[in-house]
Length: 437
Figure: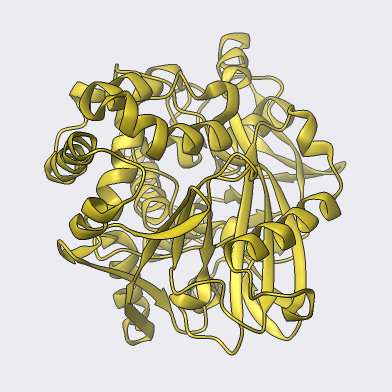
């Protein structure tokens, strides 16, 4: 088979997975990335002497595509599994959470509500077929199972401070997949096990980048593609600024809302579909502290004084010299709050952490910073997949996907790897079919 000139847009986990699979199949793709590093939302930065992810990530024992990639790259020995804990901040106190005993002891919820909540969580982890949930609205589905009392205490603020005005039009299948993933991270009813890579996500990112380059792939960092060029219904190449380069195939893995801007000559019906896709933005504050906030990895929050659904104390998963806490503020990018300066969010985090742990003082904050991502997560209403164009477009040799396409699974490194490799295999299969005609 003749080697094709293939451009990949985006060097996040999905783009890297596409490139990895293509070099396995004998191709030499060129990967274009607007950032100065690979990784997308998994990319790392120097946080006052510590290389750490800009946005938190963790791994579950069910992340098969991620674990297979580690095996293939010879870095499976870098995986570390840790027993972690969850907490719930409610009524001004931090309570244990995440297992049947914690649920029974939880203050602020009646016994019947606790039983209904626990049954729903248990059955969700056992469910295998998501299709019956695909057309259901999530809050209605949850309330029907657990009742209004448990929903108001345990779910309402998580929805409101993650999805805002989108809260009441989300797919039950999408929310179910989140419940199941965390539930399947338990090795028994009372213990949760999550994973991290020694050295952080860069251990995986660097290994994938090295493999791709060693086998003929090329990276163009700091290269923001300005246009994908189409002529007579097929790909001709791409432009970076005004410089044109010819390619036989283009595979885009950047967020779908960018597509109308860089592929403006698509049929109007396709452009309308891309325009209709909604996303949540995030301002993620990361703090380095001299002492821990708590002994929990994950803390859900229901407190009218705090406009966050929860926080992650990452150092309770990956052992580090200092405590590292991520506090994400999710919101639609059109919300007025998203235009606030970073210091507004940073000041809130200082206040919130001291509320949860009154022993913390300003002197305990070694460093604190904020990162922003405009398209952090797609909003998935009921029957979401039916609203998306096929990732294999009617334009010859143009493939477009992002994390939306592995719905109902939530965005994640493993899911991006699995879908990216699948798309690359389909792309190669298409080459073979055309060559055999």
